[in-house]
Length: 408
Image (cartoon, rainbow, N blue to C red):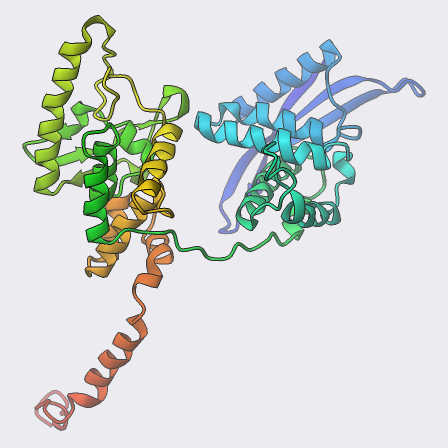
């Protein structure tokens, strides 16, 4: 069994040369002609990636498990793609979400089609059907119901990424998902809380393990995973700040923040500092009471035995209790939006809001909260009026004759 790695130089859009690596390997001999049959995979960014792909391909050929691109189905490729991206440093929750969509939606609908024969029309038909009857959660009330456009758009993005990978490896000549227009979700404004309702919701949850997570969500805009992953070593009660350094995912998995901008310091209001000090004392009392049953996690938000809080349990219990209190449409994630909305309404600069929420760019912040600033255009018109018309009469320099240098 033989194989080789070759380098070649490509020019990018800005004209700079970039070296990529291709792999060529034997897959046996043609049973009719007896000639060697070779396969090629192209476009690896590093030689190490190419060598790893070559070793894997040779091992699969020798085991008899190698998939010929000409005979590979969409389902076979999607499962192979999931294996390939396991080492891409994606979070466990992201991989789990990809796997769930691939196994329960994409493979049942498209898996039997040959990868090389997949056409844009197949994707168009799948999206249309999913929008009509795509629910797969096996609940009697919702099984076979329509999927939301946002969910179908997510399916499209996963397909696009998997097929782009196949195109890069020369398994297909072009990515059919690139020529399909995915469904456009309707813009949905999440339900938010007014300051009065926020205070009332905290009163409803006071004395439960939901109180501190809810307080932090309302007062800081932190994500659910960031709040549940917050450790006491990340809290500076003297300075009145918390530092986002990790997140907590399903199954108690600790992971890095969502993006580079997500790892950030967040100043706390004084009343939140006071509540955290009281909570720290309460936790120490829980620890003494639990004795050997105490779980030492160093987490700020825990149950009474020190164990971590399951993210889905937090959201479910929050919604259940607030629904009973008269807040039927507010989710735990809606508290983050409540925080961002209040800051924008109070005139806090969008860049400050973006940094506080940990968005990767100010553009994301403005896109999400543009509805909070309905008078922006009117303010712009008034500003231009004042600058170019309204102030001309009282401007002592408006009618002064301009002179050239030298006093002319």
